[in-house]
Every structure is written in structure tokens, then in C-alpha cells.
Amino acid sequence: MSKLARVVLVAFAMIAFVLPLRAKADEQDDLKQKIEQMSRELEALKSQVKQNEEQTKKIEELEQQIATTERKSLGRWLTIGGDYRFRFDSLQGDVAPYADGMTVFGNASQLVSAMMSGAIPPMDQQSLFGAAIMGGTYGPLTLQSAMQNAYDVSNDSLYTNRFGLNLKAKATEDVSVTARLLMYKVAGGQDDRALQSGNTAYSFDRAGIFDGTIGHVPGDSKLAVDRAYATWNNIGGQPIWFSIGRRPSTGGAPGHLRQDLPAPGVSGVPALLVDYAFDGVSLGWAPEIESLPGASAKLCYGRGYQTEIQRDDIGNGLDNTDMIGLDLVAYETDRFRAQFQYNRGMDIFDAPIMLSGPFPLAPATNIGDIDWESLDFMGMAKNVGPGNLNWFVSAGFSQTHPNGNTLQFAGLDSGYGLLFSGMPEDTNGWAIYAGGRYDLPSSNTKIGFEYNHGSENWITFTPAADDMWTAKLGVRGDVYETYLIKELALKPISSYLSKAFFKFGYQYYSFDYTGSNSWLGAPIKIDSLNNMTPQLTAPLKKAQDFYATFEVHF
Image: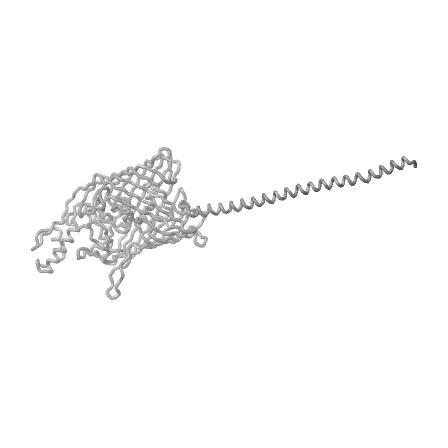
């Protein structure tokens, strides 16, 4: 091999050795750069993760602050609503001849006192009450005649203002408190005398305000508690509820239709049997039964009168007046509702404590028990012509069980017991209540008609009803009512239920028997009355009421 060849061979060998080393060095440089780049990216990622963690913590803290603020927010736990109503009534009535019971018993009391003092000779009971009715001069006494011939009565313009405030507070999970405050007064007055004529009342339930009618019968301008009760729902995770306090036992179905209010739901009562602000308790169950949607059962207990502390040595002769009830809703949807109610009133008092009015009465004795039952059906037929038809039919039954005790008035035995005069006897009564309301959504107009009839011995417990003359559902006779509601086409603001409307209505009463809405004394046929027949209230024969309202619900 020549020298030149050896030189070339050595050169190629050196190149072959150097080139791989250089390539390896370049690869190492690239790897180093990549590692450095990845390290920088990792540090950036770590920094971003740390920032994200800080942001997440801030978000969690903010969410906690928002939740705490929401829990404290009034709108989350407290709901406020209410209503205002101005009402105009024009009242006219015809009174049958009768003897004014207030005058009769006042005269009789004076005669008894005069006989006991020897100022006049003794009289038997028949002569005593005859003299008390006719009046005249008896020894030193000059007594006013109690005899009243038939006459007409009227109040051409009666103005009233009513304000209600509704509150519902969520205290804990499944526990809430509901309250309603009411003020209801006659314009230009602070009492209920506008519903009477001097010392003459035209019905027992409008003879004065008492516990269960405060805020429902025009009185003064005080804002009184109408309802205040606590409710525990979802007991044990089951559809069971417990409620206690001053009950939602006024304004029951189907009376909500003419008041243009939502249906009262499971808390309500049938209007035909009860319209009175009771204090009591209820336990309800609403199982989910596919074939019986909306079915529920409810047991109720209420106290109508609380007697005072008893003396063991002599006793006070008066027991508490209590009521128990069983309510069964067999079926309820927006199209149909079927309900049965049973009530029993125990140890009914002879007369309530009248907080106003001409009657100086207070409970003095218990006069017996009353059983009530009702069947109530209500529904809606949609798209009947241009509107929707709401309809209802209710039937009520009453049975009295007197114990023989009677009302003592002006120190005398009136002879008036639980729907009897003289000898005690059980009585049976019945009533029917039917009607409907046709709603025209296109014109915000609602037109209603209602009719009810009560038999001779019908007795219900609805003194808080929103009627001026007397609670129409307690009338022994017939009552017709028609009304028109015109809602203003204005957008609701305070709630989806808020609205304003005018209402125009007419009621016509035709009484068959005396004593409507009173449980004292046997009813007497109106056509058989004369001015020698004592009556505690002036017996209306016919009555009518033209009324108009402007109402705002918020």
C-alpha cells in the first residue's frame, strides 16, 4: 500500500470516528434543551395549578358567603302578602211581627223583683210573661210594651274597609309558621252598631262580635290576629303533617270562588259546616295513590270556649266547649274534587261572650252536643264556550243532642235550649249549597251564581262568614246570590297572585223559620209569628243586599 493510500485510509477512519461523537453531542444538546423547556413548562404549570387552587378556594368562600347571605335573606325564609278591600252595601229587609225578647226579659226581671219585695201581687208564669210582653203599669212599675208589628228596615249606604296581612316564615327544614292579621271596620265608626238598630239585632251571629268572628264581622280598626299556627311537614320522611295554633278554619271551599281566591287546599274546611276562627290542632296524611290522586285524611280538634279555673268545693257548672273533626278528600285534581267531613261539637255553650252589641251575654251553662256531616263536590269544565266553568254542590246534615239546660237571661229561665223551647228533644236538619262561576279569560271577567237552602232545624257554625245580614249558609230558608268580578288587566308585580278587581253582587234572603244561625230555642215558622211571640232577634222575613267592592291582593 502506498503512502498516499495509508494517509487517505487514516483520514477516513478519523472522520468515521469523529462524526458519531459530534452527532451524539448534538443529540445531548437537543435533549438538554428539551428538558430545560419541559422544566420551565412544569414550573409554569405548577404556578397555574396554584393559582387555580387559590381561585377555587376563593370561589368556595364566595359561594359560602352567598349561601349565608341567602339564608339570612328575608325573601328566602319569609313570605309577605295580603289584601285590601273597600265595600259598599245597600241593605233592605222586611221584619215579621214579634215580641222583642230583650224587652220581655227585662220587664219580667223587674216584675219578679217587685213581687219579691211585695210591691205587686204574685203572678203565675203565664201571667208574668203576658205582662212582660204587653207592658203597662203594675204598681210602681211602668213597663214598655214588647209587641212589634211588621216593619221595614234599611241601610242605604254602608261603607266598610278591610285590610289583611299574610305572613309565612320558614323556621327550619319542614317547619313553618303561618299568620294572618285582619282589620275590618265600618267607615265612620269603631264598632258593629251599623249592623243593628239600637238594641235590636237581626240575627244572633250579627248581634255582637265574639272570639271566632273578630276581623270577619265589621268592628274597629285594630289589626287582630285571625290565624297563627305552626306546621311540621314531611314527618319521618312520610306525607304526614302536624299543625297547631289558631286554625285556618274560615273562608273554606267553595266560598273561595266568590272571593276570587285560590282554593284553600288541605288546610281548609267545607264552607257549609264551618266558618269560625278556631284554636286547635290537626294531623294529616296525604298518601300517593295512583287511582286516587290528591287523596288525604285529616283529624282535627278545636276549642271553642275555655272555661275559667274550677273550684273543687262548689264547681262552676260550665265545661269547655270542644270540637273534633274528620276530613276525607277522596279525589282531587284541577278538574274534580270529592270530600267528606264529620264534626262533633261537645258541651256547646249557651251563649258566647259578646265583645260588643246589645246582648249582655256570656257562657253560663252547657246545653248539649251537635253532630255535623257534609258531602262536597267541586270541579271545573274547561273550554265551555269561550270560558271555563267552575261548579260545586254541597250537602250538609246536623243533629242536635240537648241535655235539657236552657239559657238564663236577666235572672230568668228563658226556656230556650239547644234547638228546643220547653221540653228537650233531638232534632235533625239539612242544607244544600250549589252554584258555579263562569270565567272568561279573554276579558278578565268572572260571573257567578249561588243558591242555598236550609231546613227548619238546620244549624251550622259559620258566624264568621262574609255576609252582612247573617251568614247565608245558616239560613233556614233560601238565599240566592249572583255576582260579577272584573279584574284589571294589569301586570302582577308583588307576586303571581297579586291583582286588583271590582266586584258587583246581589243577595236575596227568604226566611222560612226563625233563629237562622242560632242554636237557642225551637224554630218557628215565619208566617205563624205574631207580636206576642218573644224573639231574641228581630225575625227577618225577606232581606236583600246590593254590594260592590274594590279589592287589591298583593
